[in-house]
Structure formats: C-alpha cells, structure tokens
Picture 1 (cartoon, helix red, strand yellow):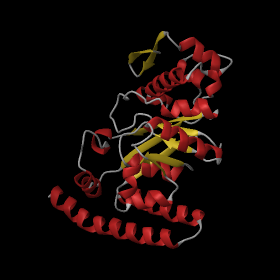
Picture 2 (picture 1 turned 135 degrees about the vertical axis):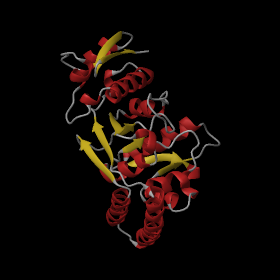
Picture 3 (picture 1 turned 90 degrees about the vertical axis):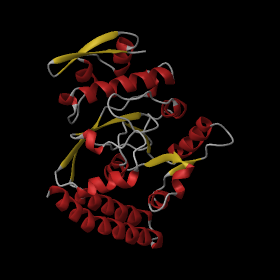
Picture 4 (picture 1 turned 180 degrees about the vertical axis):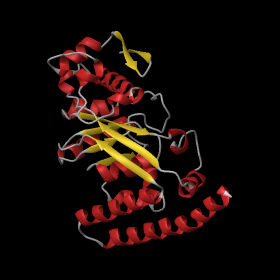
Length: 287
C-alpha cells in the first residue's frame, strides 16, 4: 500500500517540479536583472525542497564578501541549499554547462565553468577563482571534488592555494543530513531514480548547516597545512553533533583557550589529540 501511495505522489510531484523548472528557466532567461533572476531561482529551489519534505536549519551566517565557502558534499541537494542560503558563485567543470535545465540555470546564476583541457585544471581554477574574488564575489567550493559519505575524502589543494594566493578567508560549512544514507548521492548512483525516490517519500528530511569561524590564510605556513587543518576541523564537527550550533568557536571545537587562531593552528598541527563525541572518543592527527 505504501508503494502505491509513493507512486501516486511521484506522479503528482514530478510534473510539478519539471513544469516549474521550465517556467523558471524561461523567466530567468527573459529577465535582465540578476537580482530578479536570483530571486526567481531561489524561490524555485525553496519550493522544490519543500515539495520533497526538506526542512533546513542554518547555524550561523555569512556576512563578508570575497570569501571562499568550503563545504562537505554528499548530494546534489547541497547545491540547492547553498544557492538558497548563501550569496556566492560555484566553480564547476565545463561539462556541467551543457546539462539540460541544471546547466542552463547554473550559467544564469554566475556559475564559473572551467575547462579540463589545455592548461592544467589547477591553473585554470586559480585563474577564474582569482577573477571572481577580485570582483568581490564569494566562491563556493566542495574541496573533496566529488560527493562522499562520512568520513570526508581527501581535500584537493585548489581552494586553499586560491586562499593563500588571494589572501581570501575560507569559511568551512558543515552539512548534516539526519538521514544521510537515503539522501546521499554517491558511488555512481543514477540521478533520475534517486530524484524519483526523493519525490516519492513522505517523511520529513531534516538538514542542518553549520557555518564555522573563518580561517585566515595568514595563520598558515602554506596551502597544504591549511588544507589538512580545514579537513580535520570539519571532520571533528561532523563527528560531534553537539558542536553543530550557532557561533561555535575554534576554541570550543578543540577544547582549548587560545588567544589567537594562529595559536590553535600551531598547537594542533602535527600533534595527535582526542575529542569526546557522544560516549566515545575520536582521535585525529594533523598531517
């Protein structure tokens, strides 16, 4: 019986989402104002998330310009939520621009596309990223470079080299889906079946986003140190839900009372330490 109701829900919601997407795209193409285009697309994303029973909570906020937002990445819903909650531009591979609906809409939302041929991908990334930051834009990046489940995959160096080169702060953002196994889109999953499953579900899907303290590149010796520190920092918060709250500080996360952010970085780089998470302890190592 449940499968029948789920199928009925898919039959009703799928055409609504598709028609709304087409109408939104047409409206966005015709509108000369970027602010109005952004308002329309965000309204569509909010409607789609609501239709699929997503309820999101933002812990903290981002008020600065010319920053790099670095988030963990588990699903395409991360992209929708980032568009809804943050003012910034994604950097994506050029192939995404050709995707029906999604790619076209991304083009109109100032997504920055990079080619993966010719000059190295990293050099291309740094070039377009620097251009965006010089225009006082925020850049949104998933440093894993792909979707993953917990634990985090290795971070790519690009976001952190861009941060050091341009003296732009990195703001880590943590996505926490209450039912990650259902929502995660990983390991070569097919998009359409996954989306239909989301459209056919009835239960509320809760997700929280936690904005961490901005990391100043001046406090790190090099981009590798900054990359490794950021990944460990984000992993700690992912593993310890009690830290996923508004205005959480690095001192609170690391359990210290340091005077400066640089002191924390120097203390925990190349040192093993333990942090309590629930009833167990996790050990981390700054490589």
